[in-house]
Length: 228
Image (spheres, rainbow, N blue to C red):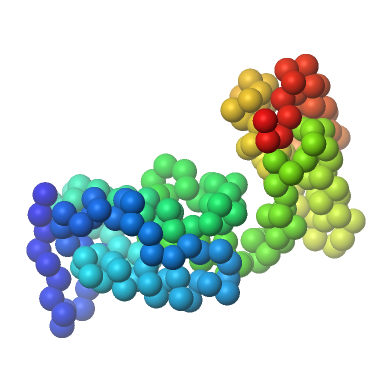
């Protein structure tokens, strides 16, 4: 695969990139780990500087258009963007990764570098919806003694929102509960199928309690405990 190296004085209209052997080398390279908003400015500067050395810094710019699928270099662009997106993901702390995963940023084509960078900025720097989810970010499944206690922790945080003037949909709390249980409880897949028939804004507190009671019961029967 090849691409024409960008010149210094040209003004790009689309994302430019330069394919080199070092793209593959990025997969295991660590620059700096992004922990929180205080680290973001330095973190992004170092990420950008490293990509400049490869001629690929445009790939994280959401203000530049991507090549079109019918363009000759589209496949090369996609290869490059995904490789860089995976590298950027590896420069994130476990907490930032979890927050990205919970909001669906890292699913499917969102691992393109520009989409991922946009998602990271929203998660770390905050937008109106992200800031409302801050209390949930500190909920660590493995710190609880049982699945029932974990569910209670999520419920208590959610209930606090509903006692305020800024309630959130209960589907958010359920998504946070389901995510860490998916590998251990087959019931999670069943519940996800059931949710396809329920509009998100119609999932009530009572429905949340009913579904999570089933999860607690199955976890107890199967001997599933956080951190084991």
